[in-house]
Every structure is written in structure tokens, then in C-alpha cells.
Length: 228
Length: 228
Image 1 (cartoon, chains in turn brown, yellow):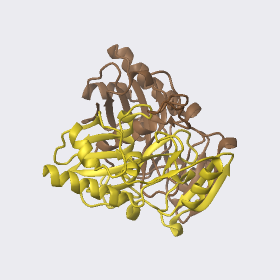
Image 2 (tube, rainbow over the protein chains, first blue to last red; image 1 turned 60 degrees about the horizontal axis):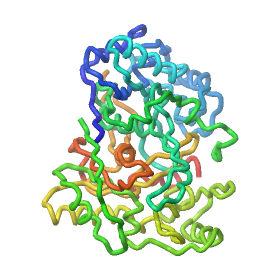
Image 3 (cartoon, chains in turn green, orange; image 1 turned 90 degrees about the horizontal axis):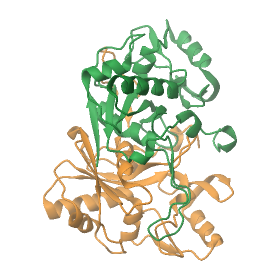
Image 4 (cartoon, rainbow over the protein chains, first blue to last red; image 1 turned 45 degrees about the vertical axis):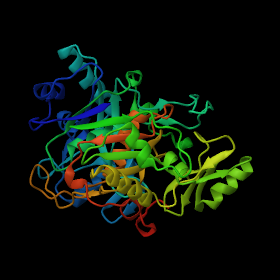
């Protein structure tokens, strides 16, 4: 059984805040927990905020944060970021930030996750994993889902290739993006309209809790990509 | 808090089986539960199985199940099915089925979900929701995740447009595909190599538990789609 627990009561996060401290004032963690933290508060703590005066300003910021624009329709740009993420508006987001400001994606969300993980471990002695999540759209399917931008202490992708199915035959193509599924599960207790930017996912398979990286394991290299 | 409970001990599913009966022999359901059932056992119960003698046979089946082929690389075809799903090999799958056989996607997975939901309710008096899940790849991100093919008794997409963020401003573009997140959460307790084709997600927001449809709410119409 897996439990997904919302962490309630976090204060407004400001540049320079130590997210691990804020979480530990509101929740207790156990060995093997996966702490899911939304990108928005990670970006705030890391000071990834920029002033945007108007739509032109916002567009310039999106272009600066993008290495390529894949599609454009009205206000919506689908762009590729320097990290290799393909998402709306390069992740530049004006919701839940001060008026006239925009939050950018963390420079390296795997590193952000490692930092929070290490800080939690230093303060509690608990071995936890951390996932930094964000809300992305998808091709061909309406609606947004949360996915992982970065992770620490958990495999991003679990390779079940070579495992056998219930008939004893070797399974093909069963590399499961467990960190994306963890981010999605966490979102179910967060909700976009509540003030719950952190959740704890408890009870995952312990063999998944090895060092992992969204950048290395999930971001699809260009040569492998059929849709770029 | 949300709990994700694996349903263990289901027998091998055969054409004509009533999945609700098989589930209720192995698990107790409560009002408000979401029962997630993998496509594979739905397809088996509905007799969506075809003989495949060789790779040519398999390819003919994939082409028959597709309305359009979007990309092709070696053995992998990314196709659009009659339902409007874009996925690998039109969902034609030879894992966990008898040698020489392939499982096809259900004809109408929303209807499959309604049938299982109604059967559970008739037998127990419990008001549950049902999600039929399958494992899809994604553009730009490695690794597979489970998504919803059909649903009953739960909104596929929860529209938070018009809600206000923590600053009191109206949020934009916050239509969350909660059934896809539920399918992803369920997959975390299933695992591709175990014999656990059903999970129960307990504790979701009750206001999401209205009638919903993956076909109507999630499948993106061509005119709206930037990548087809």
C-alpha cells in the first residue's frame, strides 16, 4: 500500500529560505519516504524570480529561457528549455507569485532535489528521496498532469526490461517513469487552488530508492526523439 | 490523505468473465473508492484477443487498429487509434497473453468502466468510480506511465479555471487530468512484472466523483492539437 500525505501549513516561501526546514516544521518524515516539492516553491527559495512589466516582457523572458520554439498558438508557446524539457512557455509562470513577477524553472532541478534531500537527512537522520514536480501539458491528451523536473534518492526510470511476465516470457519496453508517476500521485492531494506545495509519498518499493536523475534518465535525447 | 491499495489474488481472466465479481472476491470497496483496472484484463474479459502467427500478422493487426500512422522506427509504430488515442502499435500487445495471441484495446473503455462500476454497485450497494488504465509512452520524455483509457463515476479532467490562486488572482490553464494521475498512482503498486492488475485509490476529493469520460474530456480533437 502507498500513502500520499499532503503537507499543510507551509509559510510563504521567499528567496534564501531552506525548504527542508520549512517542511520539517510541518511534517515528520520516515526512512523511505519520497518528499514531493512543487517547482514553484523551489524556484522561489532559489530566487528564480524575474520582474515582468507587460506581455512583451513576458515573451522576452520565455524566449530567453528557451533554446527552441516548437509550436506557437496565440499566447501559448511550446518551447524546449536548456534542460531539454518541452513545455508551455518554457515554464515561465506568473501564478502564485507576486504581481509583476514571474517564476522560472530551477537551473538544475536534480541538484535542487539533492540539496533538499541532503538537508532533510542532515537534520533528521532519515533517508528520504525528493522529487521536484511541475505541471505540464501533453500532446494528444487534454488536461495537465504533474511530472518530475528533478529527483534525488529515487530512480527516475525503473527498467523492467528483461523481467518476465506472468507467462515467463521476457517483457519488452517496460521502462516505467516512476518519478513522473510519483509526481502525479502527489498532485492528487495538492490541488492547484490550495496552499499545499509539498506531499509525502510513503510505501514505494524500496529497491527504487537508489540515486536517480530526471536529466539523465527522462529527458529524451534528440536522436531518440520522434517528435522534435 | 490518499491510499493506493493493490488488489492481489485475482485469477487469470478469460473471455466472458465478470471483472467486478473477480475484484469483489479479492477486495472490499467503500463509497468513494476509485477502482483502477488495467486494460489487459478488460480486453481479455471482453474477448478482445486475436491470433497472431508472425510479425507480418502483428503488423496487419496494428494497421487494422489504426486510423493513422504518425511515426515509424524499426518495430515501433506510433499510431492513432479509432478512439483518438495516440500510442505505440495501436495498443496491440503480446505480453501477458497466451503465446500466439495479442490483446487489443477495448472498443469503448468508458463503456467498459461504466459496466464494471455498475456491476460493483449492483453487488455491493457501494458508489465507486472505475478507471481503465493502460501504459503509454510520451513525447520528449523517456519511460512509460499509466494513463486512463476510460472512466466512470469520476471526472476525467477537473477544471480549476476561474479558481483563484493563493494571491486571489484567477488561475489560467489549470485543467488537471485527474484520471491520468489516478492511473499513474495506481501503477505504483501494480508493477509490470507482478500479477496485480487492479488497485483501489481511496480518499480522493469527493467533488471529482461525478460522471466523466476519457473519450469526451481527454482525447484532444484534431483542430486543437498542435502535434498531429
